[in-house]
Every structure is written in C-alpha cells, then in structure tokens.
Length: 79
Image (cartoon, rainbow, N blue to C red; front, side, top):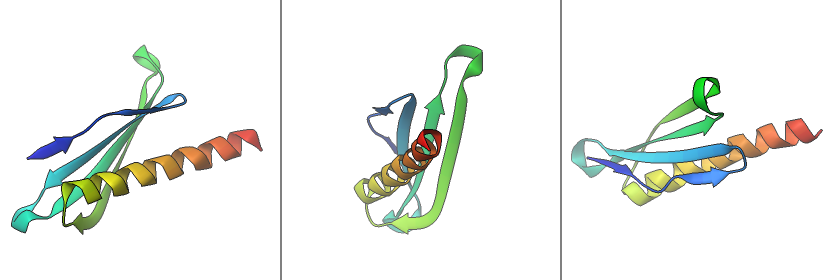
C-alpha cells in the first residue's frame, strides 16, 4: 500500500512525499521534487533507507528533507 498525500507547492517546486508499506508494518519514505513545465520539467526523487513505524512519520521525514534541499538551493541562488 502506498500513501500518497497532498502535494506541497514551494516557490517553483512541487513536493510530493510518499510512504510505502514494507514488511512487518514498517514504512519506507521517498519524495519527488519537481520543477519546470512541459519539456523543461525536472524531477528529483529521493529514497531513504530508514524505515518508520507509521506512514505519517515517513511522510514527515520525506517532506522535511525536501524542504531542506529546497532551502539549500534557494540560499545558494541568493548568495
């Protein structure tokens, strides 16, 4: 079972966290960070090796890592 929750728009990025149930009731986390439109669309996908006890915890972890990645890119552009 996959838990695909609300996408989050952050500036020019669209963040889509995902929690996927693994064996024994644990969850794996991943996140897509999309930017651009049409043929200029870029999609970065991060998959994390850590497992979580709940889908909510996996989604939170993936979302926080995506937001940190976006902040790092934004601060570099502003420097």
